[in-house]
Image (cartoon, rainbow, N blue to C red; front, side):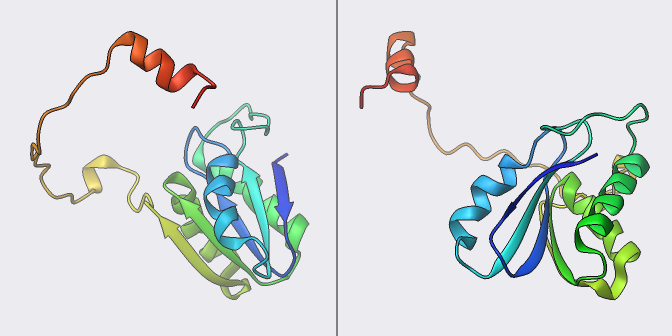
Amino acid sequence: MISYQIVGQGVPIVFIHGLALDRTSMRDFFEPLLKGSGWKRYYVDLPGMGNSPGTPQADVQTVLAALVTFIKAQLDNEKFVVCGRSFGGYLASFLTKTFGSQIRGIFLTCPVVKAHKEERVLAQHVTKPFGTVNYISHKEFKTDFFSNER
């Protein structure tokens, strides 16, 4: 079972968050951009994350199967857009194979394209220092981050 939130009316978009996050990570970013836009937004919590219960077998195939079941139950044969971030992008790419022409479009942010590290081709990491960091005191930290006074 997948916990979800629907916001708005119009063309459906299914938002799939990254690993170890929940639907608020997508909702809080996209809602200011899409409010009143004519899109019906489905923000999901993947199994074992957010408000969705975990499954005895927590692997990609199980998570993907739960997502496919959810989409079929919610959207039937309606065309939709899928938006995935990181691990959610990885799952979204598999959804294109499952749903084919039912998917109107796909939008990925920071997608996992190749899950196996040894299959990835990445640029060499280069650290470029840009200045010094001024550390704040513990008192300043408590005042800045934990005080309701602004």
